[in-house]
Image (cartoon, rainbow, N blue to C red; front, side, top):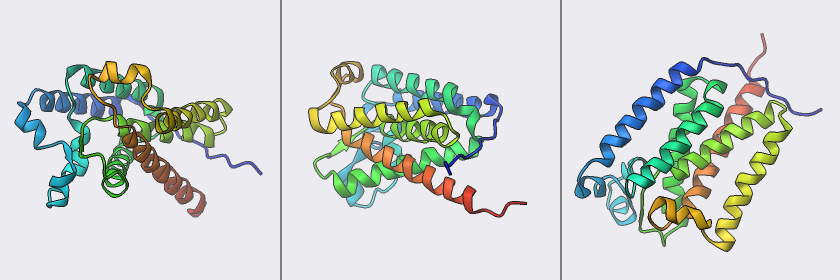
Length: 202
């Protein structure tokens, strides 16, 4: 029997409000002087020295305004595509899990990454969650889209950064962040799916 998880639809308005506030907060962070952004970025040495908040905060500051705009475009597109699939609280949790997995993954398994900033790792986690949710609901095209995302990350690990990414982000792309964010998204989706399958049916 094929696994099929029915999805309840939600209003897009609440999650759009949450995303709007988040974009505004990240714009304020982007406007901080360099020393303020440096205090928030993922910094391996600082984290190992006890500044653990950087495991999360580093995802919400960016290299520059073009990097910021690129990630905000991805966030808004993802909201439009997936926002009504789950509740705002569910999406907030998925975001935190993806961000934490990304930071911890970099810390534990990507020692060459000394510092990084940006939301792209989290966005890859949310893409896995969004397309994965569609696939579990029976959308076969979602499997193709999931394969595209996984194929992109595989290419990045084997062949290097996509040609357009570095130019649009105005800096070196930390492709390991995409992988660890996606791992976090997959873990969250798997845990939520198991919970929904195992909960008592009334």
